[in-house]
Length: 143
Image (cartoon, rainbow, N blue to C red; front, side, top):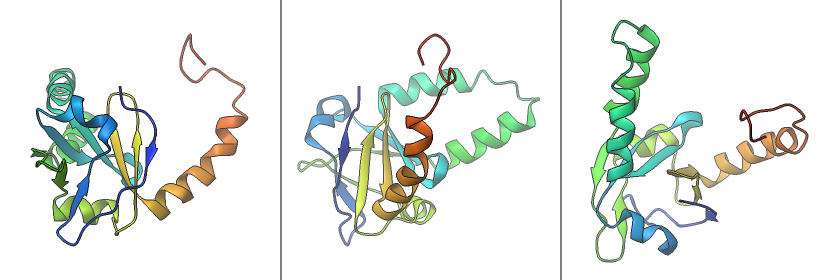
């Protein structure tokens, strides 16, 4: 499970060093793709395969499912971390997420999210109060 907040930097070649605490789960390969709210999602290869097995069950007759799959999968890039555990973030994904040198990488359970640091701070500021003041059930049976 991926947890926590980290602040790596994007180098001049478009690479980032993934946090050490995530390495065991990601050592066999990763998939980077477009995420929602203009961040990037990073999945272990195993998790991405499981996710793909679930999402490909969406009915081909559903336009919203087709649209989602096209955007989600067309941005996907399989990457293998190097010895320093750097990965290259493809240029099209860096552009999509508006990534600059300063990044925020968060653990989001089954995935990692890569954010431009300023975009993450804006998102967090806009959503922290709502989170703190949520009074209705958001996740059935849990919160």
